[in-house]
Image (cartoon, rainbow, N blue to C red; front, side):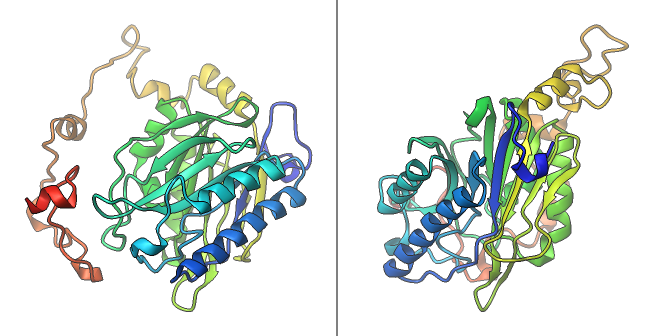
Length: 338
């Protein structure tokens, strides 16, 4: 399920390109405009690089770099010039694109958002990062769940962002909602390399779902992002992997959603996404369909609490220079001040 990186595209294939984009430094509106133009240029490179490519994926922080700057002057909006430029690039190059923006949020901290735009310039998926990488990231936690969209050539696609992929529940929710391909965009640096690899593989295998993941790449003079574009088959095997750390390299592979659907319908052994909700169906008709997991029941009841809850030492961003928050989730800054 690779097709020589997409060179030999099959009738049922979806060719994906993962851009190991050079890590930028963005401090001003002029910097933002320049980096937007750079991303548009790379959309064109992707099309020229692989005429069979259906979807080009850019990493988290593709516009803003890793500074964690929340200056409203350089935040984006869905109706802003940056997103308009990405829409036009997808139309001009007849390609789907996955993009990252830090999104202005007048009621609180910015959202870390991702978009999938089709080859007609229409937004098909809009996602706000559910699990910002605490205590390092200041972004507002996502409030819209995990969307799944219809993708190219009949595929079903979900998008999660970076730290989201360290929670197996995120991949399970994506698959449960029908995703055959789960994209994971990131800005990770080298200390996370091993966990990046095995979570990408386990997220694929445990859900009979392809995963396509990529980080920023290169250095900004302070941080060193690792690239590590990686595409995994539904059995957890890595079918494409950017191991050179070369900035702006595009890692490609063909994914076969039809084979994923075949496995989900036909596998008995290790069809874990089905068996999770049908425990022991050999012994009891239809399997047990209860919820025996305490953490799930507690989370749904708003009572999630670890046995060692009171011993946890890092519970806000003050260790990374951020002010302790005063708003509750769902409150605006104005509501918290009243």
